[in-house]
Image (cartoon, rainbow, N blue to C red):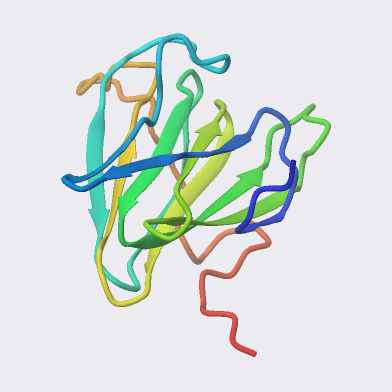
Length: 160
């Protein structure tokens, strides 16, 4: 099944799952990740990160951790790059537009570089449910400059 808002890829191990909003007269509910989901692995922690409009939070990757991204307010452009040696999709790039107008769960395996940019006029609120705890004195957080790198991706707006 094709998922709306996904360009490029695929990247081995990356999964994108549409999320369902359940509205009623009081508001709405959206399940992001359940322990009985087919793709559930384990729970490390949950956190929210926010990017202001036009801000890029990238690139980074993890050696052990799998991320489970869901943008719950605003809109974001999530980019992924497979730089893993030995991966069948090494060199592949994915671009995913997600948020209020296209709710998705994006599962990002270890080694896949990723980041996001808030698009539109509002901040983007991203919830992550990683499989590992953040270890403050030895974090599994490896960074690459968002613009000065060898990744074949441009964070600028593609007009036309």
